[in-house]
Image (cartoon, rainbow, N blue to C red):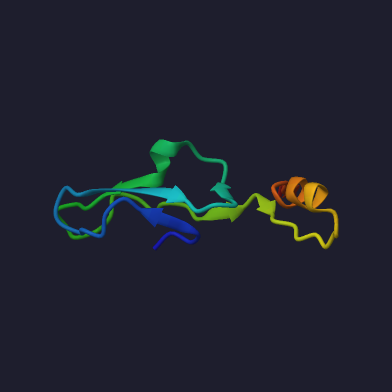
Amino acid sequence: MVAHATPNTTDALFETVVEFTCNLGYVRDGVDQEDMAAICTATSEWSHVVPDCIRKYLLCSFTNRSIARFTFEIMSACDVSV
């Protein structure tokens, strides 16, 4: 299973292609999108190991009594690039 990602299917039948999409706040760990897919082979194994997704942003919570400012800040994200 790929950490912090969602598969496009839960099928695990021969020749099934499973593509993983990183969850909100997570990104591929230095790989192309094509590396985020695996194929179920005739030997009942996956074609390769799909890398986990890593945290890209730390969502910040703010306490501010100004509604306009709070709305702006809560939609922001803190970049904690790894």
